[in-house]
Image (cartoon, rainbow, N blue to C red; front, side, top):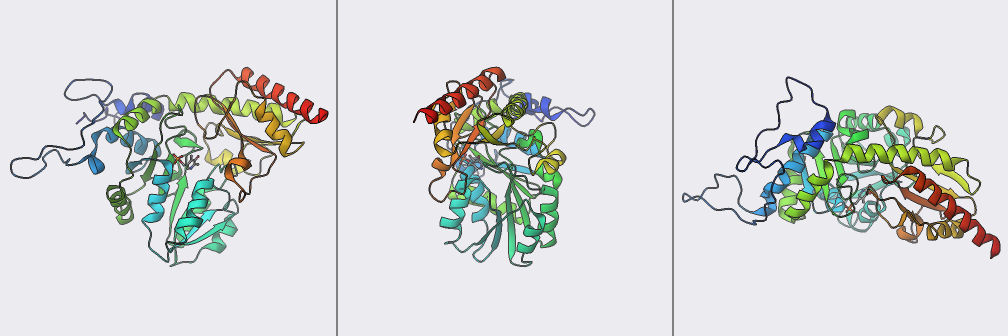
Length: 395
Ligand SMILES: *Cc1c(COP(=O)(O)O)cnc(C)c1O
């Protein structure tokens, strides 16, 4: 067990400071500044048969989850946080806590594995799933079926066009139909957007991305604004379905989260520089980044993102798919890899990873900007675009 977080009632301590110090917890037994990993799967029972520690078995009760869960709940301004074994386990736990026949409205542009799961499993298990363009509040409003619609699921900025959904407007529309709004906040992170403050009911994360930040942990999280009956159902689902992280992974997550603010501010500053630089590049048809004034979501992003527009952007190659793939083939600093939110920058030809059903334009390259020296990233992309142009000119 750990001490209470440092008293923040008398003086307002910034979230950034609280994050660096992981809420200031110190281990009660050893005074260790870094909490221990609790590997034990089981806890001793009292002679009278009770569990005075409140813990019986690791699946519902591993204490290594406590610090990262409390930190993420604080960052998101939520009542409670639950860690899961992956982002997919977290998001699908929310869907699986619904009942057959429940109507779910989701963004048409969204993280592709959620879209695939909703179509392949959510629908066959009886959810009535409808995809709409949630960047248009009137489309969302038209999709609502009061009494039937139980959940609206949005992703903003959404992969891989970084389209922006107005969270405040979506919350009003969702609540008018007495449904719950879930926001996947993986890309924005609570550094830039706190959906619960804008009216959302639940936030889901792939903690594998910015929260951990080092491309070495697979984890997910759900944060609830209130501990209502639906929240308790999600908590029971985690306990009973068992998609919980290992204790060492939970420990690594807390270690990664301490530098969240530094990492995402740096990534977003560099992403904006790269977006502006390549926006006028002769081989680039367009740059998709919500921090560019010409991006269709710019005004809403400027309103609901505080201090940056994130580290993700996409570029569409003027000469089409082959030139885009050749560009990715010629990078030397960027890593040719999927995923996002690591300290190392990554580039990928997105349509080929999403497969045949992907709605992603074939000429699109998705960039996850890391924290390297910005000039190295810019010159790497410059030379890769030039080499790709040379290839297509000679073939
Ligand atoms: C990666 C990702 C997920 C899935 O998370 P995993 O940890 O890979 O299971 C969900 N949503 C978004 C936006 C993601 O980028």
